[in-house]
Image (cartoon, rainbow, N blue to C red; front, side):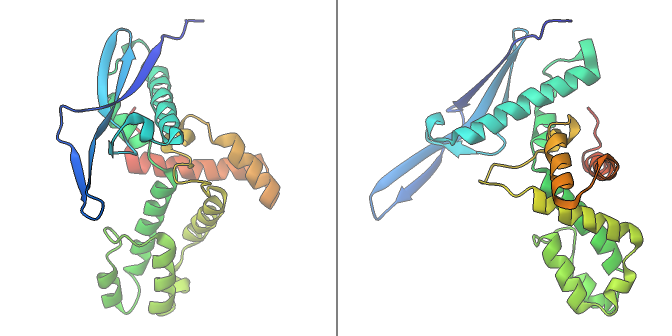
Length: 236
């Protein structure tokens, strides 16, 4: 088996860029924060990417270690996945764009997908002017909020729901009950579903909570991977 090549990840404040300054006039305190970057070293090649979940900080030590661990893990997972797909062709070039996508909270992708599907259904409902006012593509409201609005605003709304949508709605509700963060950065990322890191936890949850077996898990996994491919193109 080929030996794993060393990957070094270092967080730093990029003081070559303009800082973010806040002034507390009450206390007379000026806080200066710099953009947080990550330097990745692989096979004697370096690249730098902007940290995904924290934009500015006074010091690296002031950043929650759980956030740093999430960032490290995401970068390592991304590199390993790209190595699997690209083999000897893999380099650090282009890593940043994958990191930005794969490090996102998967629950947000799921919510966005369901909002898009809900918008297509709402476009066929009456009164139509309610649909025009809601603008599903840009509104910041969650899927759950928009779904409740649709139920209350549109005539015979639930009669418009397809069997496919009802199934996806069930999968959505199950997942949102499962992925409930203990803290702000405790969530399953997109790459956790691409490389399998989330599989065991979710399969155990489905079995314990609903009595589901492997086939039910596989149906939901197929749905999740479809969303990822649709939202990202999965072009790794």
